[in-house]
Length: 625
Picture: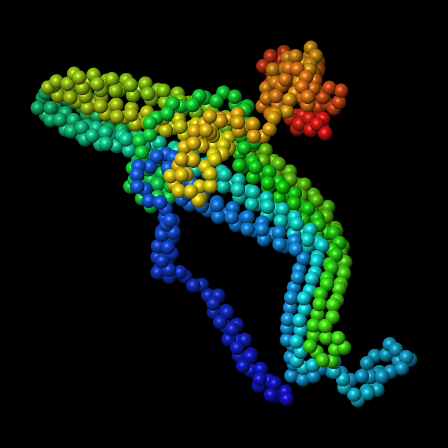
């Protein structure tokens, strides 16, 4: 019987050895074949540009943005990541459901199971098996050699439910994070397309004139050399003309290169397979007014930037992660209910229903709870510090964007003045052309300089619009382009035009209005605190509060006072006290010179408010309860 069994197992053993060897051989490095790489490149190239509406007419800026929204590969990737996170969130909901498992099986063996009974008296209780030697000589079995099994079991683990609940909340926040990243890509894409379009359009409009001027300059240089050789022009004068023309051509070529690459950048942004398309000539627009309230811009940016909202979600994810880990230290309750079936004919009942309840607790995991709690608190602190650092960077970006826009408008005005002067010089030179060679050379030089000024003016105009668009980008301004995935390019372009026109009228007050009404503060002060009022008002405005002159419902009554210490070594300490009238207070201390100036007191008041913005908001929240 044993030999027969061993012989029957040989094929199984050989098959197992063959599978192991095959698995080991598959672990060897297998480099990609060149044909596979070429096929992949061909497939990628086709996939990148398939299902695109062909460009059949000159492309306007609205159409360029519409094509970027529909076909840009970075945005397509963010949309896919958002869809994946949405599906993971849906999957995480099912992880909270109880388990309902249906099973079936078949059991077989080559002989019967069984055993021999041994009888012993109560006096032999506790004896070893070797001490009991009274076999009955009768072997019994309670199981068939082959029998079938079937079951349907319902089980619920309370601890797993709690852990899955917090994991589902994290998945939901991760989906929202993906949406904020998609918002950021759209905002950046709109900014980049508008900038590239303006530069590419300028290059397209000025290309023919630049080619003509460069040919004229080369011919003029040769003409100057010929006149120099014939003695018609003094050598020094001829060299000066040639030097001036070469400088003008070099500067023109540099300005031309600054714009010529823009069309390739635009083609990449709209995912066009080629840059052999024409841009629609768009009339220039007057530049919007310069925003003046930097505090309002900063508040708007802090409320709307996708990066800060992403950090808010990251903080919630960190909090849920701490709760999820702490929950694993709680006692676990498992409940079960199921129906079973066994075809074993020796059973008294072949089908039955069984239930179970089991509680367990990993006591060693309880020891980790303080460490987990501490790590969670540290992570929250890190999240807050990262968000605050990012907030400071965003505030700086907003200020710089506003300053750059002002400088860009100044550059545009100077470029326009330079173009006006050079155009008049070229017109005068053209009107005074005679048969003398030096006059013709002067005309070419003036024409080249005017062409350079046109390029400089076009670059300044593009930079000015880019600077204004950068303000919108720094504020996190959204655009309502509709469901552009399901619309045609023409329909999206129409929505783009309307949305951009409306957005330029909403900079930035309506953006801030989305966050609701600003908290109101009514100021009170004694004689000591009057010198701080200007700075306190600035700090409150920058911190998101409105200062009201009269009592209003819900307004915080804020008392401001100043206490100055005696002079010591040419310095004195000042303490600003901010208090809710009749209730709690907060203080701010700083070292001042012996005779502080008004500007010093103002800065001190603003710093005191800025340092206690959190307290002020807490007082207002408590008062509204």
